Length: 201
Image 1 (spheres, rainbow, N blue to C red):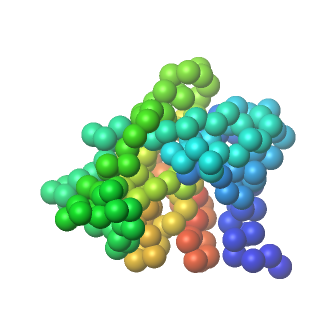
Image 2 (image 1 turned 60 degrees about the horizontal axis):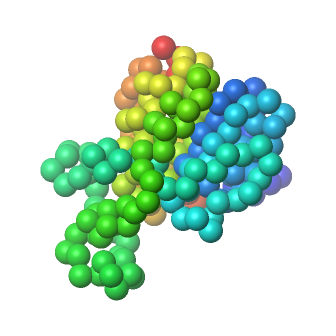
């Protein structure tokens, strides 16, 4: 019997297999290789979006896009009822003076932005698998971009769904649980947690 992490990877592969357009955010880990295997077997187009250049993996059949998956205006900010402050402290001296960690995080938004929408415009392929393995403050923003763009029968997967370990996707999981257009197929109890939902209408 595999470890919880291996089980999460097996689930990603299971649901991505047979899909035709796979986008992941927060590339560079084992999930990228796992999804690439499913994409290769399915003849799918796969795009991996990663803000940090040295985390982009050169994997055959995977198109890397380096930069931010979202725009500044997509990010939920203080005042929005769904906003949650990160529990992590910045260690970068350039932004350590910032009173609010969310603001410090946004100062990192350098380089190309809005890559999810750019990827969708670039390829005229229905989006049927999106994996959100993203940075702090990006999860809800990405969910808001893709939830209406994923085709019926397609899948949305999210990593880091448990708080307080991470704020990345626990609010995304809550939103999906309330949305009757989606059916949760998997919700694992690994440390980070993986949620996979299918769009049913």
